[in-house]
Image (cartoon, rainbow, N blue to C red; front, top):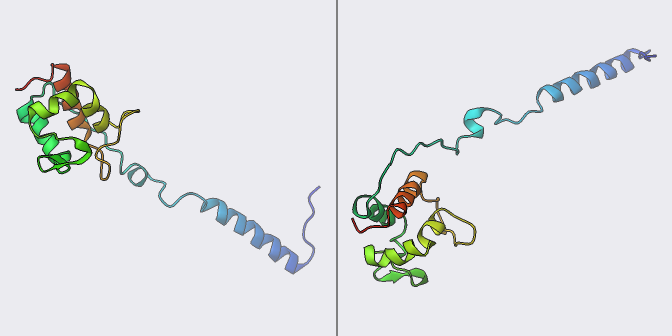
Length: 135
């Protein structure tokens, strides 16, 4: 059995509570509940690379992402990634790809700033799968 308010004040109070409840219910969703805002940092990238060479692909990736700290004159962590002969040991032991791809068990590189772009990591994988040649 439902009890109805008997006075005008009680009726107004009940009505304001009901309207307040529906107002809160209608406005309880997050401000950013739309696809563009929620997923603005998730980029669906299709990498079309099907091969990679050291000179055309890997050296420029390292130059853009790694050589600021790992080069002649500045070998942070005692790592120099300038030139094929210096890169090869890190390619062979898995550290080059592991750090760039933020794989478990490897340090995260670069330590500050954004992760190496997806397509660049895919090019490194292609180059490694092809034997990490000096081409």
